[in-house]
Image (tube, rainbow, N blue to C red; front, side, top):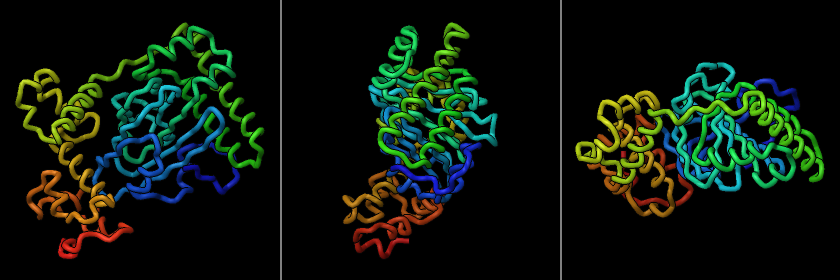
Length: 340
């Protein structure tokens, strides 16, 4: 969903741009992220998010901010290069997916895969997507860079590159300013080509000045977190498997606890509960569950104690499950009128 900026001005701070937009609740925010397969609200309390998309032929930009820590599961496209970075000008030492001082790092991904990223609370994230085909056709990127982009970054690389990070910010600012100007399809095409050329220049300069990119392998904490997360989801959020032989294959309990604390500031047991609470919330908004009572939805997610479920739910989302369901636009189960 594209959102226009109504105020014509020079874009200086990208995170300040979002402050002029209305906030969205969790469901609205998720629906505006077409490539996001799943969002889990990790932080507790009412959710508020802002999102801005700008599209040009061959290249698109997405700025987002939210007041709670979230986990995003993103479907990557094989024909796209995806650059992700933190652009919060007020928090230069912010940690992003296990990498500290994130403003100097760019996560570059290329390949058909599913990526899991953690967006810290009160931070502004920038995602730039580039068509590989158009990028190759319109720019003179050296062959060695093209080969590297198509090969090594298939599963994601963290690039330590202040120059490229700043270039991405500059390109995004230009894109936001250009989006304010009236223009024909041909003019937007010219803008898109210019933005791609500027990005290609940044990549080439960085490569030639250092003969390679300084990359950072995926942090161990992030690898462990993703492995345990996958196992938890496979086991429907149950932690019993952690005492089995599968635990030794993933890591020690101490290392798992440390990885979760470092990345999301909660342990794996609480994370499993948060996932099940988010599943419950999705079902409360799902028309397919309109005839299912809140109590039955809670039981499906392993919450057998109604009082405990409502306590957990209210703490996580800042409202009762009945309040969540009351916002739905479709008729719901009559038994919900008795729910707390």
